[in-house]
Image (cartoon, rainbow, N blue to C red; front, side, top):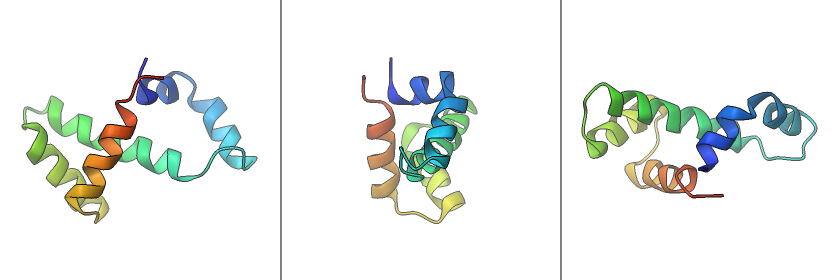
Length: 76
């Protein structure tokens, strides 16, 4: 199970952990960014273009997007 799948399956729990300051708020932001990246990939864009578009949407560099992608695709 990847980190993205875990958050997706347990979103309410993770959101509650963020509200209670157990989990950093950036987890929700990274989840949203990865979700946007995955949306572009499902639209038929290659991974580099999808990362570029997701970066443009959130005003982040390509390197930051790829770092987030690697974090969210890690097995837990």
